[in-house]
Amino acid sequence: MIHAIQIHEYGGPEVLRYEEVDITEPGPGQVRLRQTAAGVNFSDIYFREGDLKIQQFPFILGHEGAGVVEAVGEGVTDVKVGDRVAHQLVTGAYASQQIIPADRLVQLPETISDEQGASMMLKGMTAEYLVRRTYPIKPGDTILVHAAAGGVGLILIQWAKHLGATVIGTVSSEAKAELVKAHGCDYPIVYTQEDFVERVREITGGEGVPVVYDGVGKATFIKSLECLKVRGQMVIFGWSSGKVPPFDLHSLIDKSLSVTNPGLHHYTATRQELLESANTLFDVVNNGKVKIEVNHRYPLSQAVQAHIDLQARKTTGSIVLIP
Image (cartoon, rainbow, N blue to C red):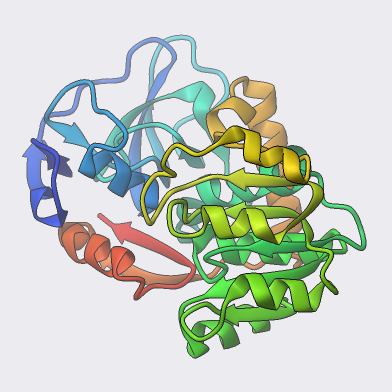
């Protein structure tokens, strides 16, 4: 038996249950992973609340983690027993052990801790495809990043600075403004105190930005379109405030705007893409261009509190659960 956080129905943080569950031996192409840390992400909340559908209950949450390979199934050659590894987009990370496909694991460099690995795979690889492939940032670009003090946000602004961008970032408090400024954000905007559309226009001399990276969704979407320059791109990668409601696509013609909602699974679908993205992430972390800071740690049994704090915007950077 192992310990895991399961849900038996959709709902608020109270539906998270710390329970004992059975675990099998790894089958062909699988490994049994002793999990040392699991990342907490807003996507976990989307699953918990039913915005992203679950095929069968009970369901173990978590899509990002790190640990040590304890057993391997037939045909596994990518990893071996004793390897320190990390993973993303494989369900079941909120657990002390996990059966996982070997081809979705990447080996962690010695320079990266288990906690960093558990908190950087989903968020860091999301930032990688956003700034390098969805809208490839060019030196001299001025960009807008919403929720800049969040897990993806802090990584994204550092990476964007590394690529030569000027970064505007929205945050909810003065304390978070200081945090993102320390991580390279040129123009923090406390959206509770000033209108971010007006401030973006002021910063860009009325021109607007070529791209908005938005993990907030409903609360920021329409106003973000106003921040874009002609032929600008709106990139939605989350909806912490709720999903964007239907809107008039024809309104985009006023500035020939484009809107995209990319997903990490489409950028790491093959083994080669997974390794290339992970290695690119490891490189920028190892050379000091991007720092992965685990600011909040909770025992696995306190996953309820972790979700409460995340939704209340009491957290910054990365959050991990420790089995």
